[in-house]
Length: 399
Image 1 (cartoon, rainbow, N blue to C red):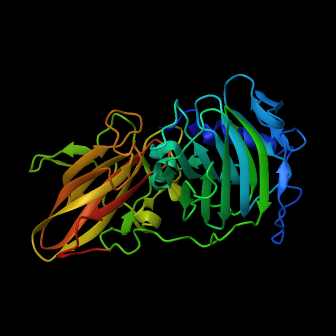
Image 2: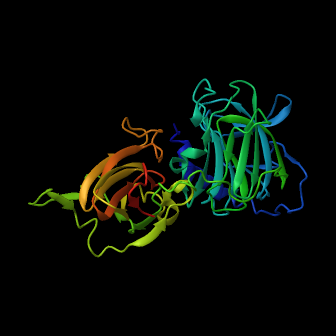
Image 3: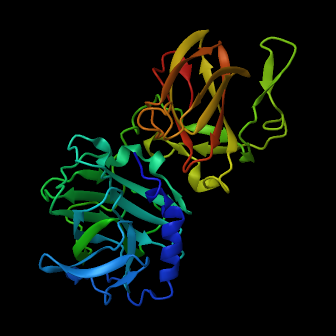
């Protein structure tokens, strides 16, 4: 699960980070040749308080920072710009939540990368959702689009947890306590920044921050292997419309006096709609968030995606579909499937409301020749997109 307080990265934290611009001017950046380890003790000489509940204190023989009121605090490393290298720090769990590190933060604070731990009671070393990497793009946290970048971890419920992050170009490895084996390996970070500031947030105790610029070990800078790359079953080429407002309480369909008795309301899709090509990216995900952003003022929005599947004869094929938040599926103009994936609701799809190829599966009745697969997709909660994969490609062709 994800904490609704933590998910306000795109509001509370961004506002706080923006305020820090007044005191943080990026007076120097790291030089590419520099690999000297630098210590940043938890004092006001090195860190800017972005929230009033921040307290720098001596703790267990070192300088530390903690919350004064049991709520998450935010701090910003002064006068430092990070691109590649190794970041290490110690974290002691204190209150439940999502202790997070933000890095490569853009000057306007709208774009950055983040790694965080989920802590809600006794840590479970088998819980895959215990850690997560995600990106924030134009204020939108893509946590629900990055299910792949989560991992289990052995956390110390008392005492320090040592975290080490090795970052190089598009890739990152994260170690927690065991510095010989990474708990999380991200082959392709999905943020849009290459360098920027560093911040910490959470109701925990932080200490012993060390940064070694350009110390990237054997980690390549280019994006790593995409496990969907060699799989021809994924539908990758789509046409997409511009988003339109789709308020709650409305219905996409309207009745007509012929079989099957319904059609798409032309308010939401008509013959004059403009379409443009969009391709699935890494992980075969058609991620619409970078292009269209997230929800606008909390309102639901709708786009349409379509593609063509050619069948050598009349045939039925199983389609697996990942999506966020709602889908309406039509085959050759006829309604076929409708579903919702609302995080936090009893009906949210496995895994826990995230967009994943494991969300849903249903049968496509294909006719001989060309078949139009049309999907309405709505969004009101963080990122949005789809992943589509045929069970097999025998007797069908698509891009």
